[in-house]
Length: 420
Image 1: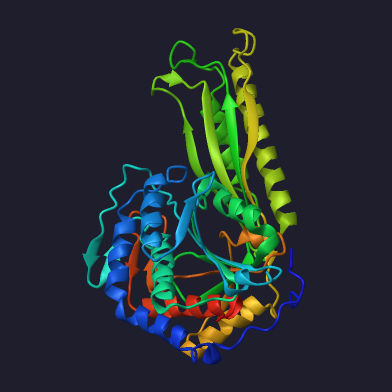
Image 2 (image 1 turned 120 degrees about the vertical axis):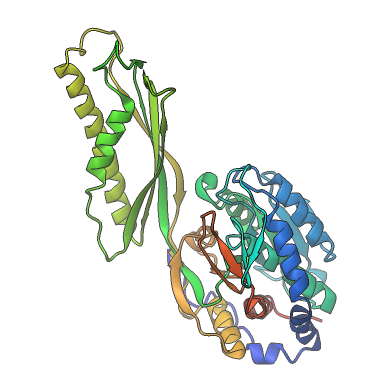
């Protein structure tokens, strides 16, 4: 979905005008003075585990840090930390679309027993998840404190949230809940994800996550050799699917990221699964790719069954046939912000003021959900530099963190307005 041009919202004030307000100027100065403190909180957050669906420990930490910034916070039904800072308009006649949501996701791709201790190496901080998305959470905390300490009063209500379920099979469930809660009131959504301030994610990359399950009778590797094997069937299907051609434009990709099954090396497994990530700039290509996956996996099962029949096992054991199930375990919708959106104008104004160069980018983030519903949304990095996302060697360099933080602050206040 492309959001209707102009949104019937006024053009935001330029950043150069915003900073004339003494409170906004104090908030920017607060960031400069507290960079070391922000990094300390960043490390605390990183070293607190938060696998998808197990974010409660990190969520409790974020709730404390946000409440220290004078916010009233609650935990919603699915575990999001939701903090509201009423705008000046809430004291009078409420404006339509009176909420601006600033959010960063809590979860990481790493299991709970992962070593999350932060190591300092030549100016870099290194630990799993330190950039994606501990940096986004540290930015959320920093901005809450900067606004509170400088007594900035926004015209619209600010909702600052640390949300669950952005990664993997979380299927953006945290953002889905936030948009459901505030949908009729949302003026704009800003997701903080990762580090770099050199891009503006204004286009949502559509994706689908699919699970394929093959089950069969199982048996002994020697005594029952020749029975149809679910892992063999998946292997045949993978070999077929991996040969599928995808276009360069619209850019399309696939990844088989997880294969599991079996109980021992000398047992024919009774069940095997794989999980696949499909992405494309085009919903039509996604449909084509999903169909190709289903066809390849079905053919893999048929090949394995034919092999079993050739070995004479087709009629020996009742219930020897393989069964296949294909389940959709996640779907991220696409969307796009128009060039003349007030939200996009606001971040570009902030970039000009800060001397920051950035480009528009398409990616899969929490911003997918509001964009798909026609709500203006972008995703921005929290500042600094990072690399190795989703790996054990992930790193973060805090140099330049202040640019990312100021950029988000000026964008947020331009859209929310500065009240009395």
